[in-house]
Each structure stands twice: as C-alpha cells, then as structure tokens.
Image 1 (cartoon, rainbow, N blue to C red):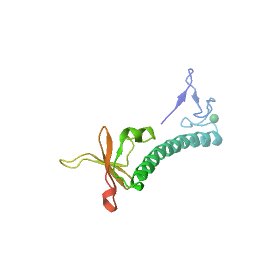
Image 2 (cartoon, helix red, strand yellow):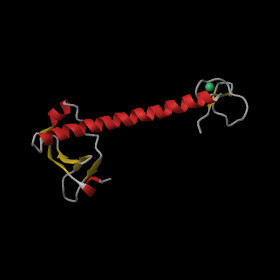
Image 3 (spheres, rainbow, N blue to C red):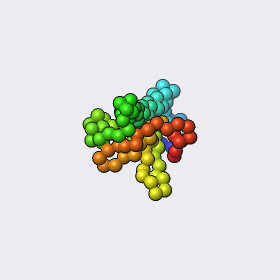
Length: 130
Ligand SMILES: [Zn+2]
C-alpha cells in the first residue's frame, strides 16, 4: 500500500497532495482524485502496451514484406534502418543442437549478426512457444 506523508507526518492525498483527515486508511481526499489517480495509472499502462504492440506490429509488417517479395532472408542492417527492433519478439526457442528461432506472431525466423534467414510462416501449435 502506497502512502504519502509530508514532513509533519500528515497523510496526503495520492493525487493532489492535500492533507487528509479522517480514517487512517484513506488515500484520497475525494472520489474525483481517486478516479484521476487510477485513470492516470491505467493510462500509463495502456501507453506502454500500445508502444510494445506497435513495435511488434512494425516488425511483423517488415517480415511480411520480405515474404511478400518472395524471399526468405534479408540483410539485418537494412532491416534495422527500416525500424526493425530485434529485441521484440512474441516467442523464442532454441531447439536442442539447433539455431535460435525467433517468432513474431505466425512468422518464424533465424537471425545472426548479418541477416535474418529462413523467414517463414508457421501455423497452428508451432506459434505457441513460451
Ligand atoms: Zn486529492
């Protein structure tokens, strides 16, 4: 439980900072402050989620473009210049004795320092790797 106190030890509203009186477990001065506080927190989470999904979606569209061009590999540097962010994946696996495989929704690929290769669509249970 988050509680804010000022130097005098008085409890303060988590949203506006006004000194609180009454019940010791009270966190907000009024319902409006409570709503504003919770809306702000959920807004930050929503922005973080949207940003992450936006990066994944851009990666996906770039991988899809390569497949649409009839290729299954590409130069990694060019892809990075186009905004691909290799740290964002929806899955990763390292088959025993095999190469790291990265997953972006239903598109799977292998990657080394120079390129992405073996880019392909997978279907069904192959996509559900944790
Ligand atoms: Zn308040």
